[in-house]
Length: 127
Image 1 (cartoon, rainbow, N blue to C red):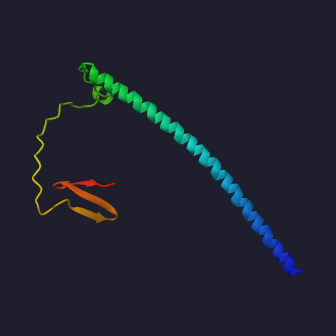
Image 2: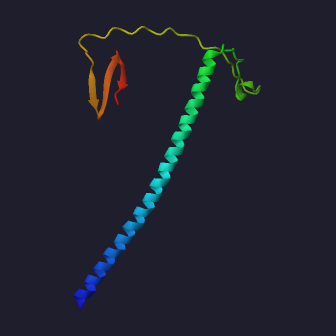
Image 3: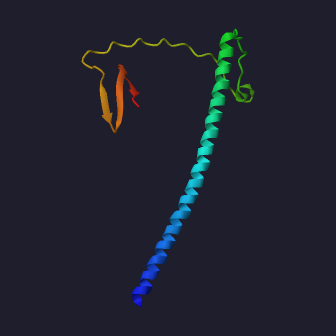
């Protein structure tokens, strides 16, 4: 008698767990479908925006660019603040030093990220 009751409780517990797994799988399938729809929508929006931007770039390069009037921010135009606006002074960019022959394509594998020396003291992350 006790064995039958124990087997019945075991079967009921297994059925309940199976039902919970089924419900969770159903919820995840619905969420997956919604995420796939959202991904398609965002990809379409991304494509549309890229086309708009490329159209603007093409139209701007074909036309003669007209110089724009400098626009100051609201804070700069406010007379209660004491801001001064000046043009930046150009600084010459130093020419890169030659790469010594003792350092051919140096690579480092620190923490799983690989780097490749592309100029002296300039590292680029490899993907």
